[in-house]
Length: 236
Image (cartoon, rainbow, N blue to C red):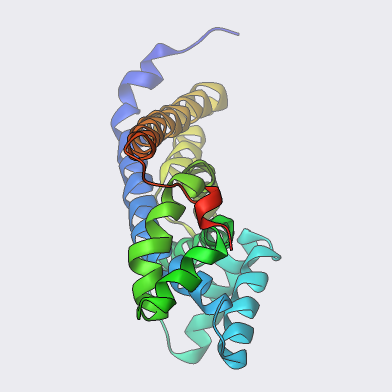
């Protein structure tokens, strides 16, 4: 088998257009999914039973059903109830909802990793639960959850390929179209694979730099005598 390099040249712009669509969808899904994940994580820790039940149900449904089924439900079922959205918007919404369930569990795990005594101490000083969470707990949660957030972000990029099943013009759909026009699946999908790899590798490198920067700041804080989340001074 020989490579037909003309396909890389002639169909490169078409694949790059799909690649750009993938980037936009993933960015929008993260922008929507991260805050929703934080709300869900805090909801699971709420003292209100109904709120805990609702958030836990949302998380478990989206974590324990196949993403492709969720995509089909949003795309094919919503029109029966009068909700008609373009495939790209459906893709963003369902990817954000799917990602938020995983982000929520990551954030909740990070919050639980912070010593409980810190929350109790904040309450003793007159802080509300939200003030304590915002100023004391969440800043210490970030370095704990960054590796898991990176993994989930990379997963969202890969899961976005499933949106091709509802005709979203993202990278995988562009590859399918090129393959159908050229009958050269190897060239088409090797380009698709390389673009996915390049995107995920870029995200991984950026997140590793952020992790190192956060870790260095955390280390500097300890040198100045600021106790970390697992310090014996903070254990309840």
